Image (cartoon, rainbow, N blue to C red; front, side, top):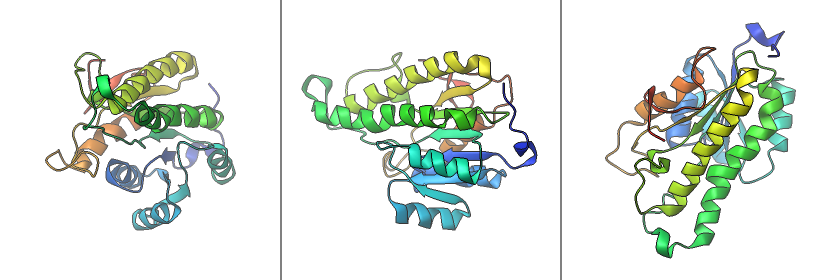
Length: 233
């Protein structure tokens, strides 16, 4: 596995999508507090900049449904490598739909952000991750994507998260020999704009994700976790 010399003595670089609010924002805060150089991305440039300024981190406007090349170029110029990619951005918890009557345009829209977005970005940033001595990819998933417990409802969200889990397994297998740890994490039902009131604190859900970012070399890869414990696929 390539080393990131001469970057080894520098603070690690973490890229977080959908970082301007909710779980993504708290992931950025926690990683920054642990010494990471965080790049917070969000679709809205002004919102990304405002959140980043409050947290004391860098920002870059990025829509995961778009071209990741400008982000990759910025990261190359600014840092030269990436140590952790957190694919957090997600949309459409479609509680109003059922699979038998689902609007497939809504399903496609969810897949573009929740599955194809992380897929495109991971591909684009792999050259930068390969320059890290301790590369990590964390896909923020959901127990809604677990086939073991899946029932009816939320078809767009559930199917796209199940796809993200499958992508996690494939990437982990293909990158295992290079030392890139790739895992999916369910933060649990968290009290956010998407999750709604009544969930557990945002800090607790985000900590479930940052655990996977901080895994030691030789740690698990290709797993599905919540709070550091396996979740059934």
